[in-house]
Length: 116
Image 1 (cartoon, one colour):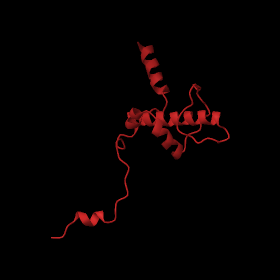
Image 2 (tube, helix red, strand yellow):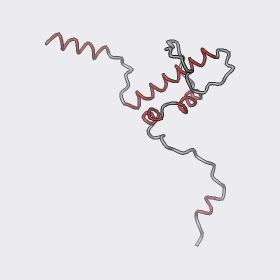
Image 3 (cartoon, rainbow, N blue to C red):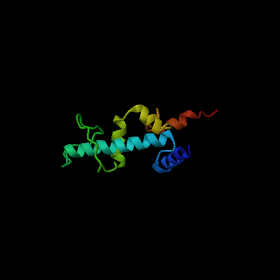
Image 4 (cartoon, rainbow, N blue to C red):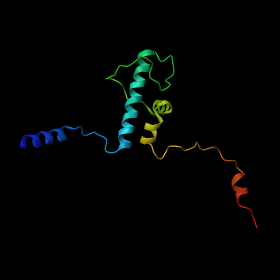
């Protein structure tokens, strides 16, 4: 029994310190890793940069790129457009379903308040 407790304690200590503390953190880490892998796949097919990155991994490319560099913000935004909506919603729950702000007309604020 004592050896089981010691083994369990060693296992808990050996867990990575970067483990996600919440489901949102885990989903964000999953999305960031997916973006890095997709971009690495894109670079493998177009090393000269002749094609723009669309956020998708190429069909048939099932490799795991150990040297995949993190995506920058524009690449990450392109990847989020193509990513699984459930994972994106879990990672960013407050942004889910928000509509893009449209430019307001200059006269719309004045017409909302009518003088008596």
